[in-house]
Length: 317
Image: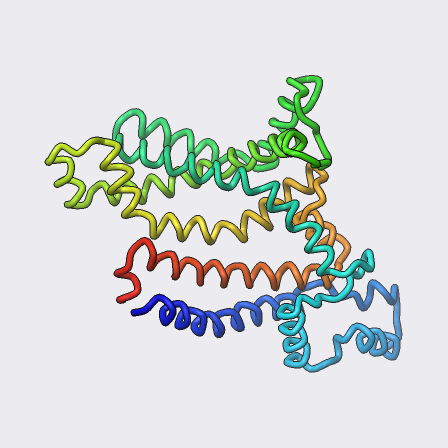
């Protein structure tokens, strides 16, 4: 199958998936999201006042009409105005998303690379003390709250009670040095909180691959440890590795940055989402929920394409 045909087929398959995901996210927003009616009216409103406000907010329009408008907003990125600040939501996203990417990208990459490396080491030594030590440390890391990790690192690295090397809050990035200054502690926090989960997952994948016949054959013919681990085990494990890596991106970008940005006072999409939740700013919430759903669909599409690159047999299935 030609690459263009394969990609075209995957694009067509992504359309109903995208419609389904956005429909579910819209239903959740409509029926479980914030309702500004009574916040605007106050106590004991009359039925006429309620009807008038709901009409102004567009809540009285048919569901399918509102969903179609929601799709139009996502496609055109004309996402309306923030109900809290009056800023265009598209401008807010353009201002905050790059900050969040710059914040979480180093920790995300380092956490996955270290997880793969530790997973390979643990799988190679499976059942021995090094494997048990790495897995025990991973469980300990998984059991510690993200907030606790942030607080401990902040005390140790950002206060006079510790080393006082980095700022406790803020984001004034102008060059590489200031970026390192403000991003180091959030990066360390993200690495610590994700490393245990990544290591356990990658260790399970690598251990399964090490048990296959072709690995035993390579070892029997005297292949070196590095050749077995990186040329055979890691290469043949790329499908589940890519799956975890790609599907983690939307989660880390939104959920990971939300706590980091809220605690460190960093003006990214996570902090904007937290403020939208507390204020009931539906315009921002609709945009974040919808675009996160779109990111998952795009991740699925990219995974399917990458599968074919790392293992052409996938396209034949």
